[in-house]
Amino acid sequence: MTMLGKVLVFITLVLGIGVAIWSTSIYTQRPGWLSEFGDADKGQYPVSIKQLEKERDVLARAAGAASAAWGNGLKALQDAEQLRAERYAKMFGKNLDGSAAKARGLLDIAVDGEDLKDPDSPGFFILKTDDKTKRLDLDDRSVRIKGPDNKDLRGANKLLQRFEADSKALIGFVEQSGKLREQQKTLGDEIILTETRILKQQNIRDNLRNEAQYLADFEVNATENRETVKKRRDQLRGRLAPFGN
Image 1 (spheres, one colour):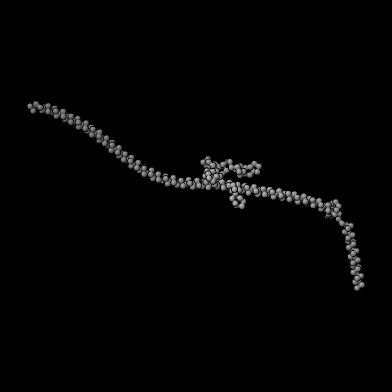
Image 2: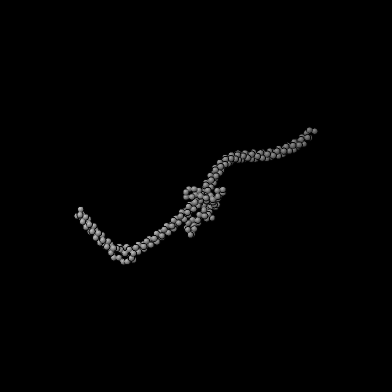
């Protein structure tokens, strides 16, 4: 037991001397944590608290700049999204979520016209470009697109309604035209029949005139013959008178 104690004491002495030597070595070769960072030889990586403070300041400024850039980017994104939502509502007449917008959009106007109560209200416009933003000005609808009749081009539904009404009217005109053609044909036949009758009446009239002329000439001849016969009778009587006595 005494021997074991001596061995343990000896081991403890050796370990204590080793720890003392190791501690002295670390203390004498410690890095300059609080000293200024200087030049270092190749292959060495000296570290100091001053250097870490400079890196911390640089990283802190970079983090601040990144945070400011993120905030500015977020604000720009929110503004862009707001602008997109407003322009989407002006273009299509509904919000991004599909709900109806307060103002009618250009697409709705192109379909139904600017004024729902006016069937001739314009539906199409030439949009101008904003010189600053290089985007279409969706609020300026002063330049209207004209149709073939030199009037404001109406919305698609209004044009379709007008087309359907014109088609129905055209069908009515075609039917009326057919009836008028039949009536024209009937009147044409009656005109031909009447003209034929007129020609016959004219022929009869001309024949009657010729007959009347002939009879008039015959009457004249008969009268002359009668007068001639009367004169000859008187002459004959005058000649025969002496014989009668």
